[in-house]
Image (cartoon, rainbow, N blue to C red; front, side, top):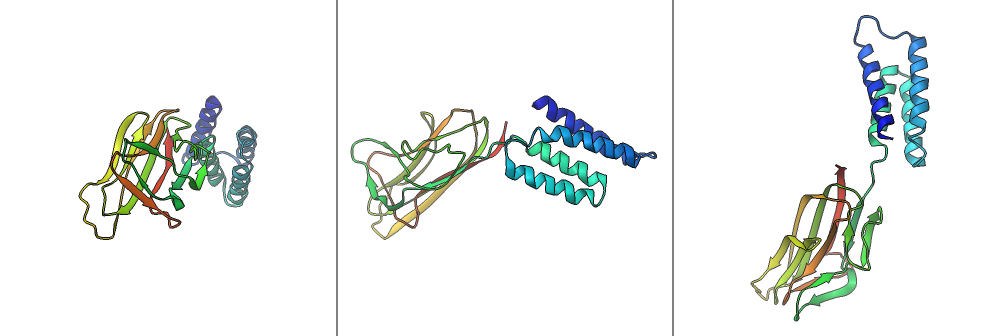
Length: 218
């Protein structure tokens, strides 16, 4: 599959360059080349009907203008082939107040807002990276200010980032957030923990959340 992609990209680049020299391709040569590339690209489109239809529309519209646009469409199409789609957003939802008094514990976000790729488990509270790549991860936390608040991001067994409010004021509630772009290996697990002697709160308005998406594979 990678070899086919490389070949298609090379063809696209070569043909595009031909439009910049003194002797461009004839219409007959361009049509023959286009048919060859479209036949090869068709093999890459069987995994996703929606993407296939959008690519065909792109080719159709571009064919009405000039061949350069067709090859640009093919270049974009090849670059987007087989890129996994991963995104999730979850919240503690109507679980109300959660507090720890005897050790830390994993937060399990039961309310799933988005889970494209099914990489988040609402049973364990873990997000498992399906592929090696850079992911953007973000989390928020809300809690009354009469008791310390925390939300700690872990990658496998290592602490990565945290939210903590350790000086109770007794005035209303606080909300905080944190996030980062992280390089994850396939199989790496992300989870949120509630530290010992801290609390977190949420309701149907989704104040306390955990979310992320794949920026690009590596």
